[in-house]
Structures are given as structure tokens and as C-alpha cells.
Length: 139
Image (cartoon, rainbow, N blue to C red; front, side, top):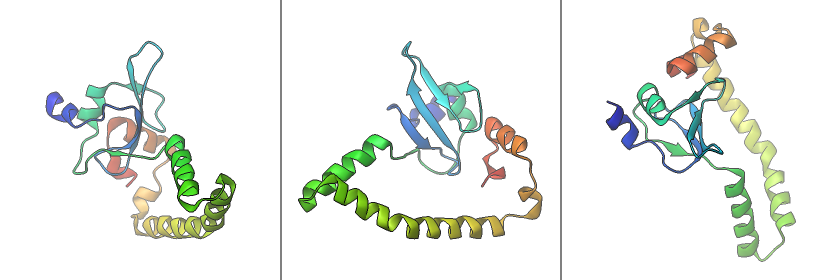
């Protein structure tokens, strides 16, 4: 089970959406070169094996964008448009409110679809659910 779970786990440090489709993990190498796997809302550090076993699901691991990716994309767009970085950032800032509003509406729609018993789970319960890999509570 460990081998099957870890074979698809990421090998490059970064922020990933986990196979459950709802949770995220920040995978990085510590100063002593050991792997650290941090789940938001959980103060513990996990290993590749414990994450791969506890955090499974039907989805593939999905690498999320980092600030380095965003900076590279801004530079790429500025070069492609033959303009300055500032112009690209201003263009992106101009569309951000509409995108934020759409995201807020999507979150509200999802929240309305969650049964009342799940909505009333205290934050500490969500942290425990994340730590135990019971991601369906937050999804």
C-alpha cells in the first residue's frame, strides 16, 4: 500500500493539491535535506509515506502555482506584448476584482450546498479531519 501510494507522490518540492481533490500539501526540503510535508491547518510535519497513505483519492497530484511561476508568467507576458512589467501587473490588477467576485460566488454556492451539520463543525474539528485524512468534511 505504501509503495502504491508513494509512486505517484510528487518528487519536486512545491505546493500541491492532493489526490482527494480538496486538500493541499506544501512539500519542501529542510536545511538538513529531509523531506517535509505540511498540511495547512496542521502543525505537524509529515513524511512522503504518511501523506501518500492517509491522503488518497481519485485525482492525480496537481502542482499549484508559486510566486516564482507568477513572476515568470508576468515576465513572459511583458516580453510577448513588448511592454513593461508594470503594464502587465496593472492589467492583471484590473481584472482581479471580477475574478475575486466570481470566486466568492462559487464559494457561496458551495457553502449553500453543504449540509447544515457539516457547516457547524468547529474549526478545531476541521483541523483534526485534515490531520486524519478525512477530507470529505471540508469538501
